[in-house]
Amino acid sequence: MADDIAPVPHDRAALTVSIVVPDAVAAIAFYVAVFDAVEDFRLVEPSGKVGHAELLIGGTRLMVSDPYPEHGAPVPKGGPPSMRLHLYVPDVDATMERAIAAGGVLRQPVQDQFYGDRSGTVSDIAGHAWNIASRREHVSPEEMQRRWDAMMQAPEQAPQL
Image 1 (cartoon, rainbow, N blue to C red):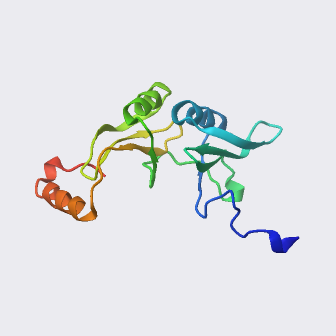
Image 2 (cartoon, rainbow, N blue to C red):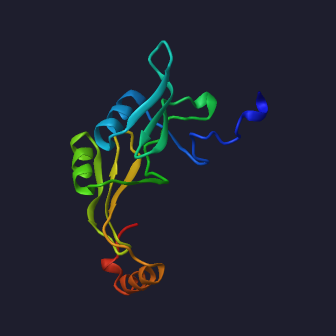
């Protein structure tokens, strides 16, 4: 009965990231190997093209597909990413090492951040930027602002965000 259908499915978040990659099969293998992703399901054309796949990474759903320009999912251009995916993991250093070993490209080395995380950024094999982090310290918004202000007084020491 239609009245029993929730507009936001109970097993989904209201906002879910969906990315287009040049080779979904390879990207899914990367996410499984590096981020311990669990594949929920995959829709595959007879040609092998992935129309839609859903992975769970740390309890968060990630949708992945090969390009479908005719359906608004164009081929990624290969330029600088306009967004980053932020992923908290138990051990940022080990995860970053796995990402690079699996073909990821280091964009920003792992380091302690003013906001309490230890983090770094890597591009996956499809060029998407992943900011990988582990929380190391609880920092209040006021303390974060104080640290930010101090950092901006010495711009040469400021992190590239």
